[in-house]
Length: 511
Image (tube, rainbow, N blue to C red; front, top):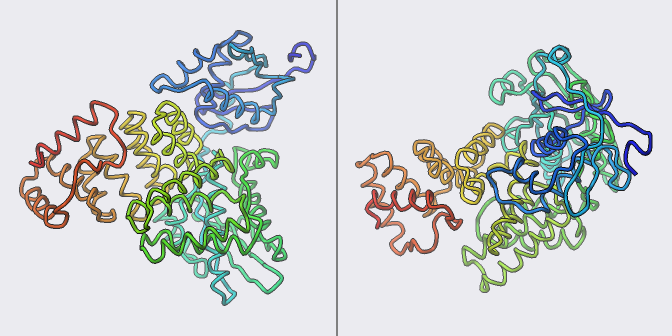
């Protein structure tokens, strides 16, 4: 039964310039691609729009398959609280496409002026001060900061600084002016954690940086078994205070952006410890991380991020040949990545890792579809953008867009860790931004591929003196380096990229 048959009419308002929609007074947040799809349907209101038409208009420069359209239709229905069997907005024409059947009003410039001058609020979440003298709760404080940051990145109305950058500023002695100047944020969330054997107490404060104005201060208290409820409470309070034009993200909408919480404190502590070991990139700690993460998963098999990090570790130790059976560990990595994606298919990092897996299997079109979706869902997640950028360049063939995503990641994480610059130097090189590539090389972990991209960039800008020294140093450090091992890390698909890589090698005298 359609909307008109039920007599229950549905209205939405669309602000074309700001890419926002309303149902009544409620602002509905959409990802950029979901909004673009909605506009395609609305422009042909009450008319059939085929799946192929949608693909041509929403993804004009990318090869995608029908299933991606279905995913975004589901996103729209979820955002609009629409039911496929009783549609008020989007009607399915089986086997052919979709039809928009709701009522639409475009917001005029006069109406828009009521919201003039409003910008997206930006926030940094500091690591909460650990009052309890226990290393477990110190890890929990970092985990709480990371989780709140991750949750808030899923809200389109918030600009969230990555944890790597915000963790540099202690909650114990907050210097709001310094944070505002260095991170360029409007708000700071900070506080403290105190724990006993049975109770956890978190005191949180949200403060405006420009005026030192306290927006709110609240104490959240739960027993140990319900400690993760604190994360939900804090995220809900921040989102409600800052989200949307009206300063309110409704509870129903918060649920749409949510993800599965850990359910076991011991499992969560093992995950945090495993993650700490993973980011050292050192053999002893990476191998220990495997045991810690496996224990975490045994206690809580439904926590997606434990599987994601375990997949990273499996791949790294296999490629470094730190284990006797690298192929076995690569197979285990595949299983971990698939499980993470299955548990949280809207997590942009899980999407990037799964897309990489699909790409390695040879299913290029499906991989492109996954990377497109990761870019849409992860536009506020610095880590996801940094990981994704190289795939946007080399798999989707969009070097300028890839460089834009990498730059956005670095804006969201101004104190980015060194691993960000490993993809950054490749992205910049293939975007023909050689000075940017050289800057990234200086900040990256010095591996053979990174040093090679330094040489290629020097060759492209014509710095013969430093090029000669760098080539000599490279041969001394890596005498057995084999270019057949694919130093790019991702097979080159496009003639432009292949030519650019070969050109750099030729100018450097390496071929």
